[in-house]
Image (cartoon, rainbow, N blue to C red; front, side, top):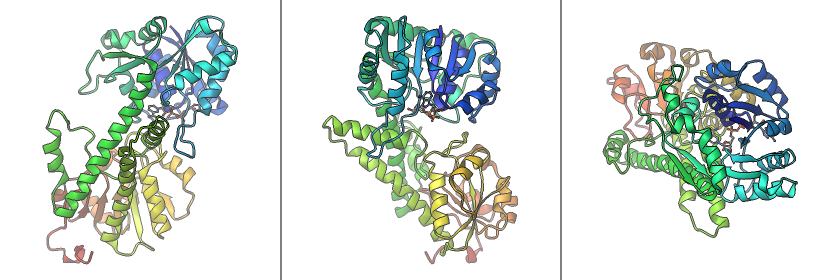
Length: 466
Ligand code: NAD
């Protein structure tokens, strides 16, 4: 099938490359000329496993890039809108990019098209897209608007797209549902998984994935309600972790007990410095705005957001507990991305913590395998420098802070780390290590929701004063 994907960012680019992988002919559209040129040159502007391979595999055959929306619409049967939906000042979703694309599509419709919201949007957006398109001259019988939310996670985006837990199609006409079903047939029908070149099946993937068909409104709500639920799980376990710290319990043991209940499940119950990224924070406030506009009192969402913000303060409290005075301290920071496996620093709790520490007068040497240059665009403070490795960052630091859950941060050579640090103190916002093992290696180790670990016979490293 001929598809256009408008917006070549984290979602659009991955979706476009994956649709090409499924055998469709895809035109990726973006209004950022630099991005289009880079993509045409074969560069992958975001860090995602398997993405360079897919772009290379399909770039000269089924995948093309353009800034010309009208031409892409005319050449395609289905147009996916995957532009950003950032938060407006009041927290509601700013849909101006979506509206502008809908206007742009309207003028180029001369045969039947399905216009699909891939961006995360509030309920009723499909109605608005239809209205805007009609106002701008699109013939009513020549298009349908559908919702097909995207559930991929940055860091594992390609695998998530090709091995999804489910595919949700929100369509209000049979014709439109049929077209969308065809887009996903290689996944829902299972043929993709039999292809010799298919990307490796991730652990726990269930193939083929179920295809859930709903109305457009239900589908729009599914995405917001899913993200709000996941954020709630994170805030819930973070609140439980705080209680664990106060009473001297261990949150990991508690999670094992809670998560083994099949009604709850163990996933997404990892305490840390809170959620971030370009989705959860904005989707929570957008969903809260939807609830308010529809007259529903959904204060649970306020509490989820409050706990998440508090979590950063709790982490800063641990740094103070370990170091007392922050002004003038040299800190090693591991991780700037909002999570491991990505170079995305949007709404990164790691960056928020770095900024707070700089305000307190710390000097920071940071290391991130992928996100350093993006972080440097945001924080220009001279007291933030970038190291080439975790050990380089740790050199002569008063303490090491782990802020992102990159896999390589969980596999550090602890004796090398100990030698590099001025004081052997590790404050882990992601619980990547076993406290006992850290103490055995001579490291003071503070983590989230677990008792502090102090090496034996190191009374100088005691935290008693706090
Ligand atoms: P992004 O900022 O990475 O990409 C958006 C792209 O759209 C940019 O390249 C931008 O240049 C382009 N664009 C903006 N206006 C345009 C226009 N008028 N015409 C053509 N291109 C235009 O955003 P993203 O992270 O890909 O997110 C896109 C949507 O998908 C959002 O609604 C987001 O909430 C949702 N989503 C994101 C993720 C994620 O993990 N990033 C996951 C699921 C859903």
